[in-house]
Length: 155
Image 1 (cartoon, rainbow, N blue to C red):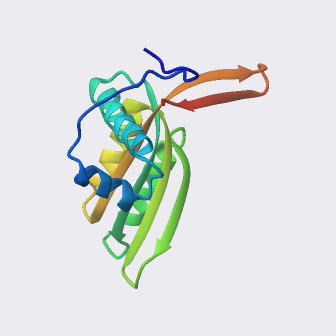
Image 2 (cartoon, rainbow, N blue to C red):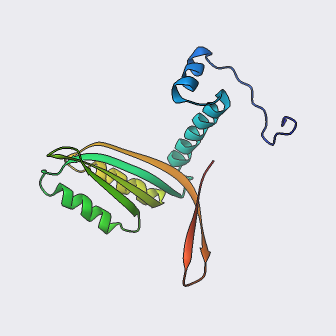
Image 3 (cartoon, rainbow, N blue to C red):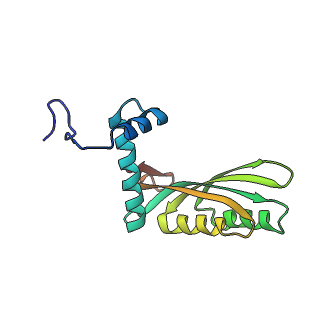
């Protein structure tokens, strides 16, 4: 039953006391409710992705690679060009003489985006690969000559 003046139902639960309070402090949440909502959103995001109910997603792919590794930089760049419909943006940083950090923003069907991310991370010479997908709902708007994709992350 919603609390008076509040559109959200009140949820009461037991939690491991000081452990959760420490997490709230360590992560900088203003209160326990914000921390709990964030944890719940993360669990729901993972469920949508694992169950296959998230048709589309956006995501941040990051990885470190040795640019001296034979043709690796060229392969990674070619992957992005070959899947230009998924690749929104790329940022490249030189960490040292041999190693580069790349971050790639991806958007598209969850299946295609996950496949791209896994393919990049699996390249021989790529290290520390991580992909953070966010399920979204999409809708098209605009005219025939000027279309926009409206993206809304699940909440």
